[in-house]
Picture 1 (spheres, rainbow, N blue to C red):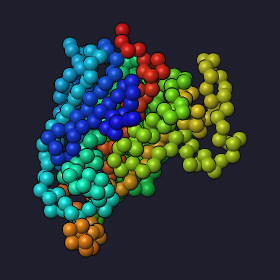
Picture 2 (cartoon, rainbow, N blue to C red):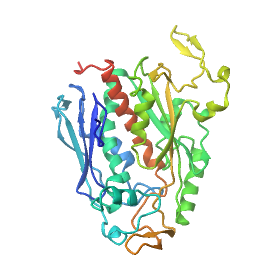
Picture 3 (tube, helix red, strand yellow):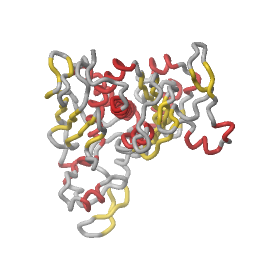
Picture 4 (cartoon, rainbow, N blue to C red):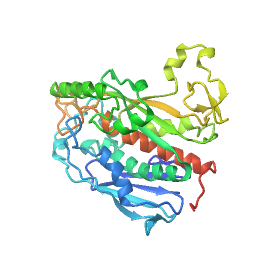
Amino acid sequence: MSLPNTLGNSFAITCFGESHGRCVGIVIDGCPTGLDLTESDVQRLLDLRKPGQSIVTTQRQEEDQVEFLSGTFRGKTTGAPIAMLIWNGDQRSSDYDKIVNIPRPGHADYPAFVKYSGMNDYRGGGRFSGRITACFVMAGAVALKLLEKALGLEIYAYTLELGGIKADIEKLSKEEILAKRYTNEVRCPDQSSADKMKELVIKERGHGDSLGGIVECNVLNLPVGVGEPVFSSIESDISKAIFSIPAVKAIEFGSGFAGTRLKGTQNNDVYVLDAGGKIVTKTNNSGGILGGLSTAMPVVFRVGFKPASSIAAAQNTLDMGSMRETKLIVPGRHDPTVVPRAVPVVECMTACVISDLAIRGGFIPRVLK
């Protein structure tokens, strides 16, 4: 039986903590021995998702300073479980005491209250808060470094669409995408679209509303045959991991839903030899995956995020104490869109899955030389 707070088998991550608890953290079991790893490697990724960095994110101020508790010695992984945490600091838990019986629209308050008989930590969403994605980033930072060292992999994501404004990614080279995706608040490498996205987020925030969007992710240099069909195919495991990110409501690989409107002669990827004699495909409608296995083409997928549920506009809901309808303005400080901060989270969860599958499939040894 799988454990609900653990993801993976050979590279297994176990997440703990709540939004307004003392801390949030992660334990990694199965990371190979001998990986160069310091707190600064993890901090670099955490700094990309921490709150309070711009007008398009929540103004909750958290340092998100990672602490290693175990699993490294003299700057290298030892093979023992790697435990990391960050302390919570800027909580305003009293904001939530006033609405303990008033479920917030779009949140897990009501089903969590029923499932746990009212004993769940409701402050800031507790276990269901986006705050736990800091744990995913800590684990992913380790996975990203492992994949780069052992396989030369690149994993990168960016905001493709926000509030219905879609970036013109086709005009950009990979080098331009990598250079520009973190140069603006919305994490979109197309600067013209990024400016429009930011303007729209600010406008809707002023109206007390929020926006959703799409993050696109790419995995490059993945060897042929990574994946463990049928229930641990790359798509299966990536999808499970991605849907563990709060606010995710959709995922598609390759041509995705657009492929359903094509004919087989249009959607099939034809095999050819590239200039170096390597087997590749002329197109990549499969998103680099066939039969749940990697094809050595780029793995490409897109993740759909719903509009942030906590908004300043008044909404109708129910008071479970009186069982009467009421109006609610959600207290606290919240993201007008989760998309920009989700970009590194998508990268990191993808890296955790690929690390797990690569170790299971024998592509990464247990001891790195």
